[in-house]
Length: 560
Image (cartoon, rainbow, N blue to C red):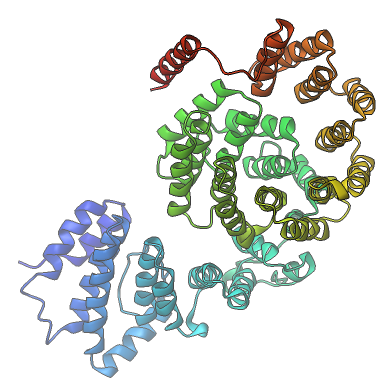
């Protein structure tokens, strides 16, 4: 009794992949299909089984099965093969491994399916070899997009650009092609020129006037962000948000940019808005985790990580968030989580940023440089420049640090945080402090509310013995910004000048704003010893150490 082929197609169409796979094993082993006399039937049956295996994520078995199908295809008489291809062409069927209505065999489709399996297994080079065996004229939209990704992952930029451009010629709504082209340096005008102005076959891909307007704005916003014009990008995203209120994708893009440029409170607000609209979003949630740690909001951070683990524990964002959570307790454990995120997706930028920061904290600046370089190769942004500068300074590579800082300034002209980076390098040696002062002051003229530059300038004043100038500067900022870091810096300056009561007042103010501020806690503990006449740098007694260890063990036990 023969196995009905149309039944496996029905199972596949209804997403019953386990049953399709089991039925497929009967289909390919049927004694009624003679491989020698009916190789085309054998090949078709194997492709159906391969499709079922693909959807079950058994990629190795799928590759093996598809290759068997190609072996049988090669022994089909030429006449039959030609008629098969023309039959397939007439059916205009999708080449996706998810498309199952196989009535004929097309070698290019099977190669695409094999390449898709290799891509899913992160075997980029092997996938590319398969795809390059498909003539460019025979590639459809899905094939062009996969080809573009493979070229980009193997750093064949020109090939990637060509394939992404071809995607947009076929369909202007391939959003990932728009973003990729922007990141690869294409201008908004160039990308928009690819959009079809007249209907193609079947009327697909044409832009009406209304769609054209918002899509062009989207292209412009992505090009601004890729060119580090964060202000312009945020303005365009805000315009799009008026047209599409509560659009989670736009809100996430805005939040990510705000996180990069240091608008922490605004970014947190937008991430929280996204989670209120869709609590199961994982995209960019590792960026949100970093911000929560920055604000010492460990309660929300714990909940976020718990939620992400319950949504999808296989995503790289989840491992970066775990790394952020563990950093406070176990930096080496946190580092292993960051490395795991990169292993899952070697193009996941926050994984490299987190890894670099942890290596820097672990006093391994040379390794940190490699991590930040990895982030830069994917997409240079402010954080990777900051990481490089601080890493180079950590092992006294001032020349390299200055080069990286100037690269940041060149990439982000008229951007206060880039100017501060150059100032940080000059401030690292006594001969460059006057230059550092000028860069910090320039940064504050560009962005008067940039507390990072104000704190750095205050620190410079303290180093050069101008404590009064430092106090005046910080108190001026406190009038407009009630920030815990300003209070901590003021407390440190007052403590250094033996104005202990004023120092105490500012440490207490910092802890009222942020009870988790570690610098304020340690500073206050040190100050209290000073006020009691105890040397804060003297080693503690053994008994006190034992108590602290007991507390730490109890805290660890609670965490576990």
